[in-house]
Length: 74
Image (cartoon, rainbow, N blue to C red; front, top):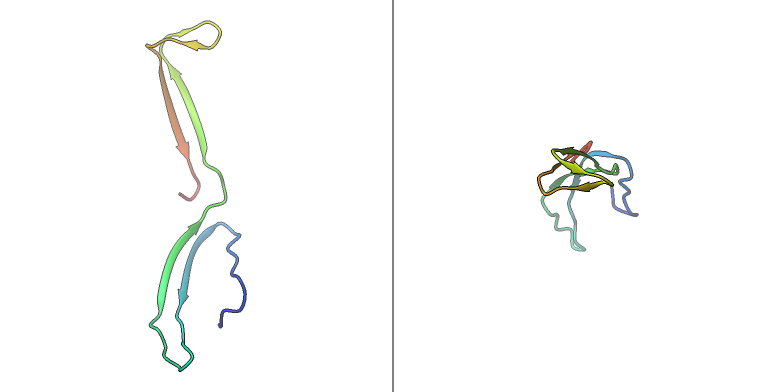
């Protein structure tokens, strides 16, 4: 279809956009294609504290902090 307004990609998912152009004298460009992902959900990050900890939420230098992230689409 001919491009006339903005195309909105406001739903999460994988998209394939195919396009080409035609100039004012009728020259047609070859087809182009772009794949992309719309990811609207923020990633979740979890942590774990392993080892020695000190009072009042102060960690010692011997404490290991690990992070684990999850993202639905990325």
